[in-house]
Length: 400
Image 1 (cartoon, helix red, strand yellow):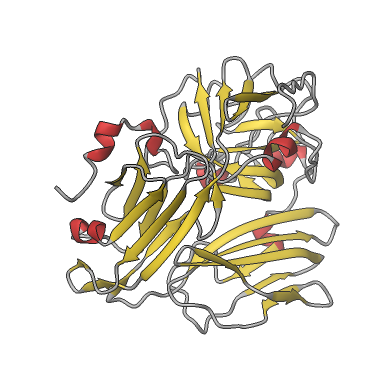
Image 2: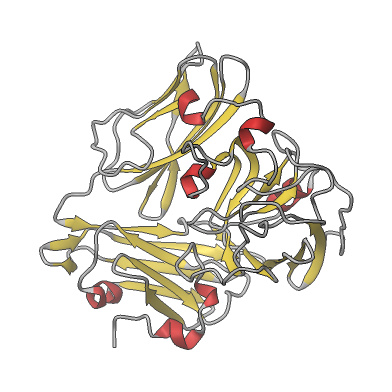
């Protein structure tokens, strides 16, 4: 068992992946080139409907690729795509050039540019689904171990008009048994959760019986698949934006009180319960992608190598490491653009608060923010469904 209380005080650096106030990212890092100018990825980031014969390629014009990881997600199962970096370090290509139908691909690449500056890029794209078919992209992945706050979420590639028919074709069960209910967010997302977070050790099974179910006129389901995941230990971290601290508790025991920085007064952090949906050892954060732009259209910040980044919302809230802010930020003031920042070093280290927390976290863990001067996070922003009462949640079913 870890020590009951670890308290970091007077630690170096701070801020948030929505980056700190004061100097912007360009000024702090010597105006590095944008990651998309260093690392080129095909198919393009965010593209939909890539064809099986489209080329999958990661390349740099100068410098050298350090690492490339490509993951194919299909029917809730993640498979790493095998490939190799060329001898000159300028390109990565898969061993099998074909793309799978009805899949989502994630590319994470790290490279050094021609001046030796490290840059990271994270891109996603989806592949073609026949016009008369629909599929659901499922969270979490098959055979994963997740935190007790995980919510089963299906994001459909097309709008569903007969939501009741689709809902009936999806069955979510647990061992030990617990009441699990569905909730629709709009016409293309269906989430499932119990009234309270899962008990550690629970095994959850999701059966998709969507094949030939008519979701909309003339559009039929493609999937007939069963997958499962296991719930790990219970860890909840509470960020107090007023005290600038985060208490990390596992199975009710306090593991650590960590100094943090949250959103500055003009860019406060959401209150409420948020679920870790993605964990990235290194990523780029650009303010322009989440609405923080300067007069010239560039992002208010652009940090190419943010370490230990954990996504909390779809709108861009992260809990992440920070190496670029002043030493007296953590535990004293809030300076970020809305994220929660922990002290880190460039490149990341397991010895820092950010690295320590990252190494002890799971996708599905809950991070709750309190005492921030902002509204509560929306239930459909990431896996925010725990912010909705059980009675209201149950009304979101299409089956009456």
